[in-house]
Image 1 (spheres, rainbow, N blue to C red):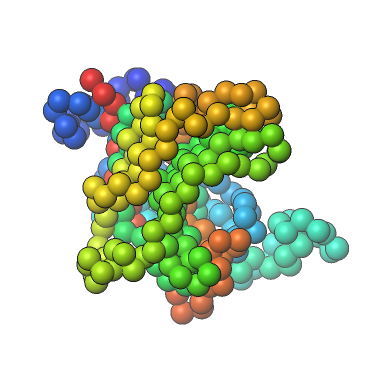
Image 2 (tube, one colour):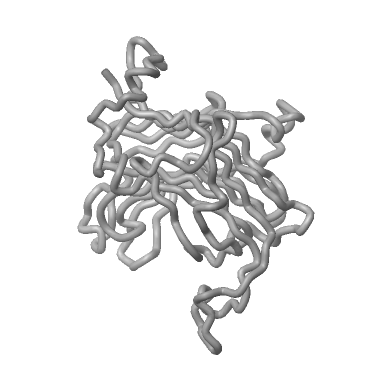
Length: 281
């Protein structure tokens, strides 16, 4: 069932809190209040190897709701890769064994929104190899011409942990993005709070016709003006941030950006308290 954000849901009626009485009202949320699997009215599961030469095999079993949280768990477990093919060049098929599993969930085709405020309260894993993310993709066109907003990524850059806030759009070359990326060293947050990694934090995106602003616990990490986010010729010169986007939550491991993992890091747990979408009155 396709649901646009303009349609109210029962959860909205039950969860009437307002972020700012003068500006925003809640239009959709998932509070993960019922134990078990996610509500498939709104969520999809990615399956198998997805992108970036990451280590994990995505499967639904690694995402579950418990005690009011969505828990995405990366587990160290080895089994035969069903895609394996001797002599294959593609990284998805060249691996004989799956080394670890995790989950990636999306609202593609089920809950999409254009403009407003997205808030996610979560506690992220920061172990070696962990690559948790909160992001959105545009509902039409091929990546990156569909537009990507990374509200949160955590991974190591040259061995140093960073939290990233990024926006990407299309160029004249297929699968080559133009990035507005801000990488903040993890030490910046630890200096203010040595217990940062053991606590929950709020990531926020404010998105309107003029700009995308990305925050962590109220601190502005990145601001991108929509006057600059124009696709190249493959994206037909369109602006991918003037269309509906859908939400993705995933815990990747290793790969191009995640780096080497550590056996002692498993299981990794990415815990999400809520996902809320607000729109201006």
